[in-house]
Length: 115
Image (cartoon, rainbow, N blue to C red; front, side, top):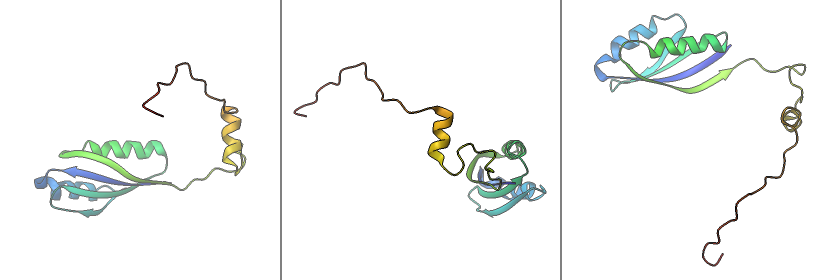
């Protein structure tokens, strides 16, 4: 399950109507709002794809000026079989990316002042 918290902006005269539209959605909840056009919304989705579709749905509602994701939580966690590095993130990154190499510089550094 995925949970997201959004900040939605609308025009001050549209807050009440937009809030009612969002509250009518079975998967969204209006957490807070202010008459100056800010609405805080929490919603959930079973998959990331479903969550993206719901985000797009909210963004397309009449009167929405902007939608920003403020927080996102995913309840699913990787199992040891899915995570080749186990609980060691360095080993995981090295297994996917290989060992880090020393960067090489092809340009001389310009001397600044007395440094």
